[in-house]
Length: 620
Image (tube, rainbow, N blue to C red; front, side, top):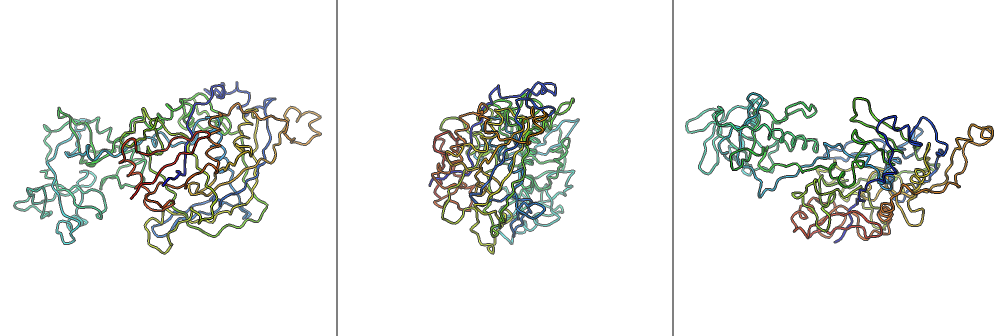
């Protein structure tokens, strides 16, 4: 069964050279006629645009969101003015329009995760990259060494409730020897058998038992089969130690990477407690138990905290985007010296700046909240389906190799593969069926994932709001770019802007209409004639300048945001024949990874006038 992914991509392209503004320093910016705040240019346009916003599907724009629990969903409170009337916040409108402006003008991706968070890792191939050797890390004269340990022995069986060794492992006094200094774990004693199983564990020495340490994998006992007993007399023979300083640095980078992707410690070993907020802290410490691999010369090539660990993906998202377009496609940073059109309009903040100060720029656009003169009643409370998204890097959805071949995680290399582009959400067709944004799970049914759901009271369909965008000192091309972002199709074809929470589910579909554009004539404003006239005048005589708009990107937007182009259900990947299902969507990605190269599915960027990319479900 075919379906459309809720999100699609428009390819990243370089902005036109003539559309950029030099901003190497404040002196360079003074040479600009328009991108400045200290004076108005005589040909610059200032004034406001008045717009009407109409909801086509229910809309949720929250003021506050409370976290859910295992038994109850979170809750989203609607945004309201102090007088209690419903409104849509200006920053939400600003974000919606700036996204369209960026795409139309091929501007930089102004909102992008930090470079550290855009460095990805994947799990190694369990058929080829399993680690078998284990060692103990120690330090000597500022260098790290690994002391090889004997083979480990299997301990206990969690499937047998009456197993003595299982009860021993669950005992609160039994700790892992994951790190000597951190855990101060005691030695244990066990009888080792030829079948590599250890039994009769105790804390006291006994005849026929061998001294060793326990290696406990993680915190939870359910879904686990056994732990390991590792024979060791407590002594380190330095003549057998192998220098591994460089590999320690690489392992530390992977640990930081995993920590950035996951706030919990579920991917870290039991007893692993390090301070990731301090970049100078030692993420890998003396006393750690580490798996390792050697080359043909017995040199250790890589270290790991588990037998099937992760490897960093070469390149990184920033590098892939830079190769897709140019350095100016990345968010504003100290390496860039030119502003793209969206940055010139909406402003930039340089967070990682040089010693001579930051290059910041305030916006020349000010949005008001969208308000309504109608008495709008919120809809009854509903519980949304889980707003999910595949964990990066998810090559099937976010990256491509060019041509018809879709990438598997193990094949992804961001030194040669590129990002699909800018992310946009498809509009959903109106339907008489039950809304697809509401969960089908009864609230009284036990469910561990309730904390991933949200309760909300949406603004209903056909609700009207109005807002203004005040603009200062825009060029004719910049004003034309802003007008086109507000009304990309100029009413010739349907175009659904997307706003607020639940866009992947079909919420937040709106239409915008430009009611009027008023401008201020700055030259006449302070003349005798100007003092006798009203502040604003109609700007009907201003022709629309489209010189900042990339026609190919514009066409792709018109294709993507037109609900008439939707041919299949819009939903997250699923198995079987039931679209909009709330089952385990990750099964689709697992099945897709196992397909042969030519049969593997993936998204490609939307192109003007062509069919919107679709995917197919897999049989269970």
